[in-house]
Image (cartoon, rainbow, N blue to C red; front, side, top):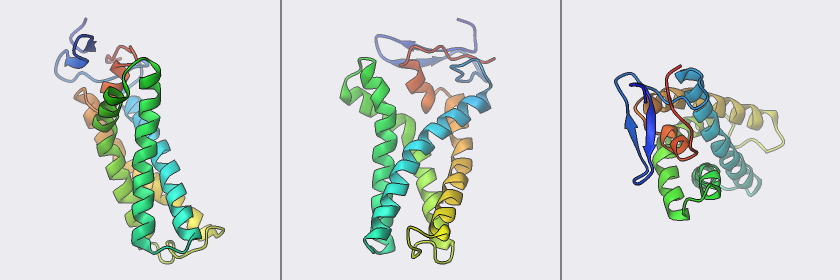
Length: 179
């Protein structure tokens, strides 16, 4: 192993960091590409849950607080589920996969949810717009895009330190190294 690789210790499932400045890099690309990939992964789960929660709350005429609470709960549920599915499929127990998903995704999902819900609240009329309106969908799309941009530096920082999605990728048997 060179000094900039991360590897999983099979007996414990922990990552070792080979040296300062090492980064997670499963595909051999740049740290930024890996961080963006992790951000998009989290965004997918967040977007599914967020859109579903906003659509349900808006369609049922619920208030902002209940709609946002549902959207946040669904975003975390879908985000964790998307991380857990391949882990369980690779043979990890549901409990271990859940712990890994929680450790790798919580910061990213929390940032995305905070940003996108604040934006939905500050765009005039976005939370009260009907689901068939351009205002609703444009606001939600913009909020999710800005949420991804806000989460990217955190994902990058976590991956650089062998945390976040670097942990999950180690359980997929991928080598992590600097290109």
